[in-house]
Length: 108
Length: 121
Image 1 (cartoon, rainbow over the protein chains, first blue to last red):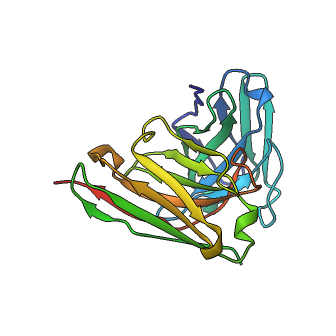
Image 2 (cartoon, one colour):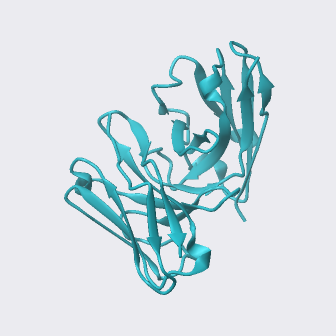
Image 3 (cartoon, rainbow over the protein chains, first blue to last red):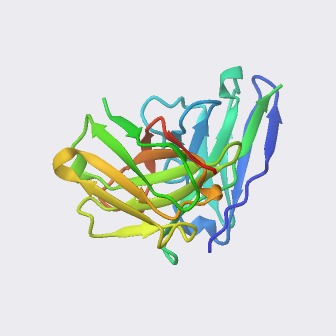
């Protein structure tokens, strides 16, 4: 089955840029979606179809996808961005939705 | 405003059954596919099952296939998950999530708040 690999943790200082990666075999050929989950809350979609933002999500959140790596980029990081982030794709070969293991973003 | 409210969770013994429900409002329910996603305590997200708008396409994670059954009642704006032969490893917070289209191949938005299932003797 298709596997998505994320770093367990990423740390960044306020005002800096955080980059969270999601690795998968030829992931560039798939559409990648990203979710933010704060403690005790349900996940929230922050990027869909590699780089599109739902309404209400700040422009500071952006995404890219090429080759074997998709990336969620958070610019001008704020304390409120501290959360777990998950990538997700549809694997047509198995007819399964697949999530990455999640990355905990810590704002120093 | 789209709302998804899960119910039916609780404490159940291994090998027993439980049925989860998700009441949807604020959108045309029968236009969209729906999903169940779970999260074990302190762990990541795991897709459990998805169902297309008309129940014509259904998918399950390998970990629950043959034990869980997803269904929907478009007249009642409701999604269900029948869970049989429950195991300790099924212990998790179960989320209901709306798809962005009628098929279950896209992204999830929004999510409900979840209902907790604990499998223990």
